[in-house]
Each structure stands twice: as C-alpha cells, then as structure tokens.
Amino acid sequence: MTAAGPTTRPSGGAAAPDWDQAVGALRGAGVAGATVGLIAHVNPDSDSLGSALALGLALRDLGATPYVSFDGEPFHIPESLEFMPGQELLVPPDKLPEPLPVAVTLDVGSPGRLGRLAAWLDTASTTIVVDHHRAGVPFGSTRVIDPEAASTSVVVVEILDRLGYRLTADVATALYAGLVTDTGSFRQAATNPAAHEVAARLVAAGADPTTVGWSVWGSHGFRYVGLLGDVLGRARLEPDAAGGLGLAWTTISRADFAAHALEIEHVEGVIDVLWGVREAEVAAVCKETPAGTLMVSLRSRGRIDVGALAGRLGGGGHREKAGFDAPGPPAATIRAIIAELDLLTGHA
Image (cartoon, rainbow, N blue to C red; front, side):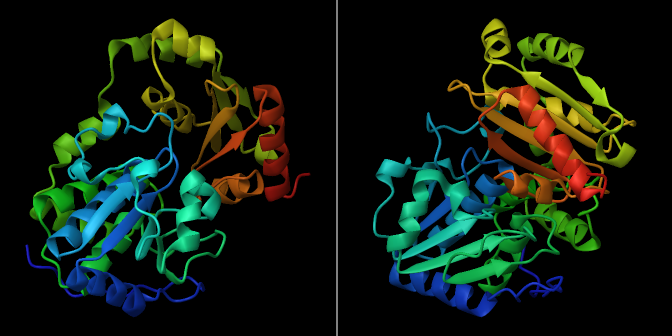
C-alpha cells in the first residue's frame, strides 16, 4: 500500500512534534547504514514493542542497522505477543551496541521507564523520543510527541509517511497491535477518527485483525481460568472512592502465580474484567512480583485521569490506562490510590 501524505494533528498545547529533525536523522541513518537502537519501555506492551519492531523493520528496509531492546528479567516477550513480526531484531540490553549513533525510545514517558537502558541515551549521538503521552518527563534531543494520537504506533505511521516508506504486512501488523491495545479495541475515548483511518490503512496493508485480536485480547491457557476465579473472588468495591465514583480492585499474589503455574505476563486480562464494573469509575490490580514488590495496573472509564494518578505514584500512562510499581503491601498501596483519587476529585 502506498503511504498516504502525512497529516499533522494539533498537539493539545504541547510543543509541536519535531518531525523534520527526527525524519532527517532516521533518513540519514538509512543512507549511511548506521546502527539505530530502538528501545521500548520496561516489560513492554504491544504499543511500545510493536512500535519499536515496526520502525526497526522499516529502517532495515531503508538501509539502517536496527536493534530493538528493552529491560526485563528474564529478557523475553510475553506469549500474547509471540505473533509479532520482526523479532529477529531483538537483543537483550547487554547485546545492544554502545554508544549508539541514533537511539529512539518508543512509548516511553520518562527515562525511568527504560530501566537499565536509560544509560544508552547518555552516550547516543542523537536521541529521539517517539510517544503520545500527554504528561511525562522531558528528555531526548528530538521529541516527536503527539498527545492527540491514539497510540505511539499512530505516531510511527506518520514518521513512516514522512520517510516515504511503503507499508509492508509485517510492519502493519506490529503497528496494528499497538493501536488495538492502546484504544482498548477501539472503545476508549482516545479512539478518534484518525485512529480508525490508520486502522483501515494497516489492515489494507496486510495486518490481520483476527490474529492480532485473539493474540492480544482473547487467547489464554485454561490455568488462567482457575486463577481468575481466585482473584475475582477476593475483588473489592470501594463505592466512596473518587468522590463516590468508585474503585474496584483485587490482588494477585506470588502464591496465586505458583498455585496456577502462571507468571505476571499471563494475567494482564484481569484488569479488563474489573474495568467493566459499572459501579466503579476506576479499576486497580496489584500483582506481586517474584521480588515481593507490586506492579499495579490502573484503568479508568475516562472521568478520572489515571495517568496523572500513576505519575504521582512514580509511574505513568494515559488518561484511561496507566500503571506504577510499589513496594507494597497491597493494602497500603490501595490506600495510596484512594488518597490520590480523593485529591484528583477534590474530596481529600
């Protein structure tokens, strides 16, 4: 499919994306055959990883030497993302060249979300931040941030348009996965007309919505059904939280993971069940890591900005989807969430 002409969207009051400088650096890397490091955030979702792999595949076609990496122990991608094309570009952090002529971060709101790989930005000749988060910590020499974009993958589509790149099926598939994830299967408020237009282009270029949809959202092992019964059985509703808008929450302990022979990557769907609770504007799931800390997922129906909430607790995300890490225990973490919700709604 021949790329359509680029369409610059308003930036919602943020600094305008520096398209020309970013595209010039990436085009130059292709001409020179230069090494480009494409860095996703810690424990990447399909928007961060899909954007990195898609841009890496495109840059390889344009002549560059791309590497895709992220921080995570062990270094592997979740089963739900094993369909992703371009995995031959993946290297663990200790195999990523340093210094990098060009380093690109994808869907990363702050250097802290890069883990160990934040150090690569300090030595890279050019650092390009590609993102769509409205809030974040400014970093990078070139910033391509469009808060009106439904996903980082949409921003990557525009970069590819400006490079004059013709979308391939593999590139389209990786980008479509990111778009589907960050729009909640096109049901979140971020799903604007441009998101549907990009989705149509990606499908026309070869992305398979059925494969992506089942892989990202609908497929799980039977052991997950047992875990789901356990953790939903202890779910709690806090109807007075967020000024009466409500909070639904649950926890997943190390004992739960052990009992059902599952890992954190297998339980991302739990938050989506609580997200559908009518009596709660906000949903939260506290997942205990092997180290005993917590990974907290947050969701909102739109009236509460959980991205801002997560940012106040050391994490980040979007208005309707966000997360942060916490030392625990779960009860104290939930109290902190409720306190922040009260502040956000003026009921502290």
